[in-house]
Length: 152
Length: 192
Image (cartoon, rainbow over all chains, first blue to last red; front, side, top):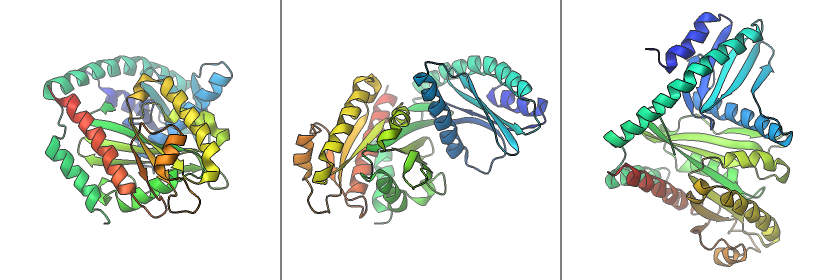
């Protein structure tokens, strides 16, 4: 059974011009990344989320719902698409056909949306059953003591 | 807080008037309080205007334990970027409201309190967030003491610290209190 990584990697395999695919939550937390970037996924996620939300805000002012963002750089094209639980961004070379990229995005979003819903339910169960591995009072004290010691 | 993979993510936001000291606070904490091995990126990522003020945000994530990431943001304080500020409040778990204690900034602070209360009124989730007031620039001349300014701005119900972002006075203490509160909340959630 395919997982989120398989879906993301599949886009890169099918479309040779694609150099990267990034799935983030709406707040920019990186969920899955394929391809190589000079930036840390955390930074990239925060920037992509800010871009999308800025354009979404413009849309709100214009009373329009934002569907996707397409950006053309010197050597790259970037296509950003909203999902129910996140944002899918595909980055491709300048010769890539944007129609193909959008088609790939649409197909992936349909599958990822279902997959992420299932994952969320599984995660909720995992947190409930295993109580995650959260710090107890002693663990909290250990973490905070690091801040007390640093540089003082 | 959000769960992805085997990690939980917290979001802490620095909010306040332009030049109140939000970015300076974050930079001081990053340089002086966050241990090197907790830093997930080599620097604070900033989106600035051409004249060097925060346009969208400053951002840095820190990993405080193998399963806990804290994402630190500052919101722009410029009035004309109000619409970009709103989005940063989404899912904030902790908010540092940075208040400029200089007497000449009182009205400007009041405007931001009104904006802040509007966000709180519109979000049950935000009302449950941890809020700490940083009364900044307390080391300057002609400032209000924290208690008096808290009363003037009707922010007395929140815990507050007199700080100097430039000198780092009380920033460490306030940050530790914020992280402690978030972790204690997480601990409570994890209890059977």
